[in-house]
Length: 194
Image 1: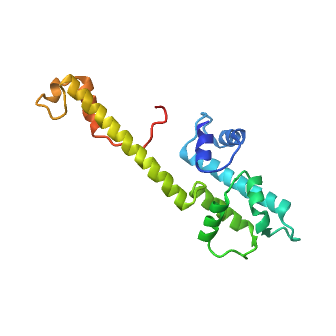
Image 2: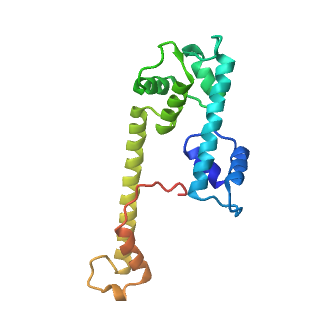
Image 3: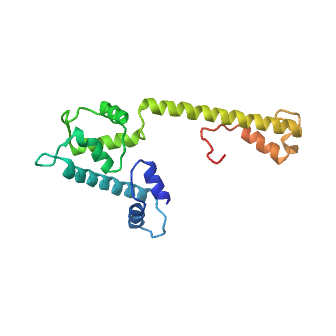
């Protein structure tokens, strides 16, 4: 399960059973766990499988005799056939960042592979969308930090162990020690459980 989640986190639309099978193949020690080097092998297998998918969609959607050029009109459906569901805004944004394409109306396989790498890099968001999401996330983190600091302060006031009081840390209760350590922490993560 962990390896599957890591591969999905990297942006690959993979089948859980296939990842489990690959992980079992690369687990040289047979322990059921995978080292970082073995994990890199899993990712390599997944990337190779993705390129095989690119070849498959080229065979299916290319109209040229050699099956070497995918027309721009078939690009989005070919992506969804590979389980990448790309919005028009994201597609346009990524295409603008890519170096010169082979031609304006067609893709070659390497360009599709480059597009998918860029898509995974930006997690399927335009730069503007990612900036908006980050702004909201950062605002939520600030709110959580302020709420935590206020609760810590209120607890300290109620039990007389307010931070900065003349009581020495030796005489503080465990809850006061915990508050002191929490006070110094800032979070850049949102707790999904509360």
